[in-house]
Image (cartoon, rainbow, N blue to C red):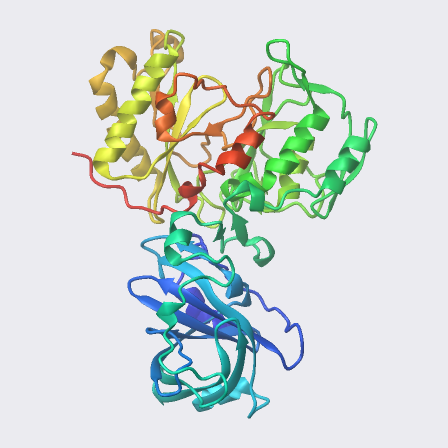
Length: 525
């Protein structure tokens, strides 16, 4: 199947486009195959007609869509085969990528070939007769090649033929009932082709994120002080479950290791897209947030064999060689059980460690910086991004600061993103010089804030969204909307592991667009 999918892979950079790279999947029933039609608005509207044949989705682009009208012939263009995992993809492919646009599952069902036991051979021969059993498309169809990759698609005169039948009169998805406009405005899922096929479909909303089942959480609650926990299909030995990791805040209940592991398991599917295919720097506090923490980057030799990992080929002697890579939810639960209270993923992927996918802006308050001062700096950045037409996404750090992540297209170096962020932040700082210091050493800043652009470097990290911070109450680094900068109740440590989950359920993942907005950085003038 690798040869069949080669054209598909060549046209896509799977570290950029949220589509699956593909893997062989056996047919569910011998002699019965699936088909799907996806209404796809890219540069032009068309319908992607896909048939399951020989382990892939053999595909045609049909500009005007299939029809049940037996008197009409539709032009169809044979395009590259797609992987079977693409069968139920419905969402948005980022602008600027191959096929960028919105996609719905317009029709789906099964099909059979009445005239051949070798439909792949029939396609290669240029003529395929097929019976469709879909929600919208039914009856006998014929695909006939006219020349090269150009084909005709027609419906035979049978009991399912309907005069004047037009695909555009039936615009809704058979999967969700939604239109392309509705899916584009509020997609439920995205594909991450840089993940294994089994986890390539990533939920963008907490309700669909596929967290641990109630029995798994019940098992954790049922342990006394330790136990062997089966979660996300993996086996973890968990210990010291009643140990306090975070003291209570304002007279509230402390957070135990059991509480922390429960949070890590529940939030893992939401955090996964920000950690997957990235080396993880773990900030460990084995004795809890009240003790001194330390950075732990090297995956220990006693780590379970199933943990995803990456060996850095550029590591020098004495440097970290093998990193944990959180490619599955259980890996994050393992890190939490290992005492990693904070999660810091690289801003580049393991496939291209010298090419960042985000540009980072860190509004780092000084000792004399008031929260209102930091809000002024954040709002000035907001105005700058609006002026530049750049998509950028803020989050509070869970401590005292605010961070802004700017998604970028592949191809940038860290030197380029660092220079761009420095230029932007110096322009902002020039507006309010009384609030900002550019000194490197903290004790030389006179208590002023620093607009830190230096984190834009290989193996430099900012705390991941939804990661806890080592402080009373277990605050988390929480994505916010730009409008929330004007909410008088907002504080940098407002959200905790106990309050962020209801917020996620109510509002969804406010950071999700970071994953969908590959963009070029405009010149700064």
